[in-house]
Image (cartoon, rainbow, N blue to C red; front, side):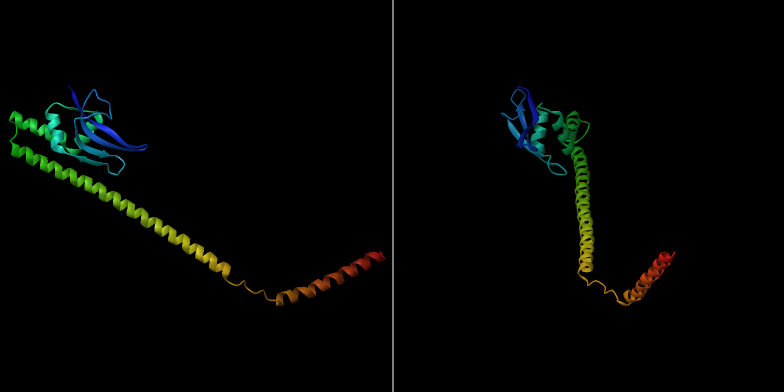
Length: 186
């Protein structure tokens, strides 16, 4: 019975959630499986991977073949590196203490990289929120200024300039009467 480590899809349409399982390669994708090894949620950023490293390593040592996607996940979590180190211990190239030291060093570096990404994402999110709040404040201030300008009384137009224009208007008809009488005489 050839065993595969693979993903078993769950979740609703557009929101996948996967169980990592060891299953007979002849069984359907979402069908019968031998053992659940972990879960994978690609909907979060970074993707959430919960994996029992010991179970996955045991299945790989017993000959289970991971699918391409699961191979990438196992590599990301360091299970394949751990398998590589264990093979070195079996061949006598390393001692178990050296392999464990290398694994701990790699694991600490990987965790710091993942934490740096999480921190960067949270900082970017808080910066975006701060920029949006700043923009909203400027828009609100502009609205308040526009409302204040509309609510302020309109400036009163002085009547003195209107009175000066009136005599000019009276002279204009008199001048036109003179021109009309001049044209009638002619």
